[in-house]
Amino acid sequence: MVSKKYKGYIGEKLAENWLKNRGFKIVYKNLKVGKIGEVDLVCKKDGVHYFIEVKSSFNYDLDFPPEFHFNKSKFMKIVKMANLIANKQNFSRWKIALLTISKNSKNVKLKFYKNV
Image 1 (cartoon, helix red, strand yellow):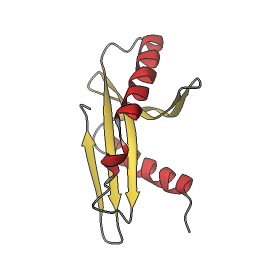
Image 2 (cartoon, helix red, strand yellow; image 1 turned 30 degrees about the vertical axis):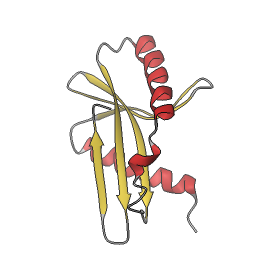
Image 3 (cartoon, helix red, strand yellow; image 1 turned 60 degrees about the horizontal axis):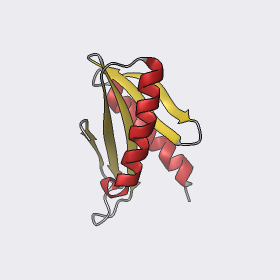
Image 4 (cartoon, one colour; image 1 turned 90 degrees about the horizontal axis):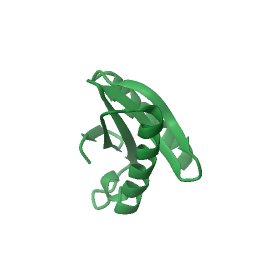
C-alpha cells in the first residue's frame, strides 16, 4: 500500500509539472510558515504570485472529490500564511489558488482554480 505522504508527493509533482507547462515559475515548494502550516506551492506568472494548495485523490470517489477537502478553515490558514509571506517578500500582487488532481486507473484530471 502506498503511503499518504508519497501520494501527496506524487500529486505535488504532477501539479508542479502542469503549472510549469503553462508558464508558471515555481518560487517555493512546501514553504513552512512558522507554526501556522505549510504552503504547497508559491508560483509566479505575469507579475502575480500564486499561493497554491494542492489536493489530490487517487482512485477517487465521485462523492468526495479533492475539492471537498479544501474547506473554510484551510482557506483561512492559507490566507494568513500568504499575507505574512507577501508582506515579508514585498509581493505587490498575489492570489490564493487551488489545484486538484483526480486519478484513477485510467485517467488523471487536473483542475486549476486561480481565484479561490
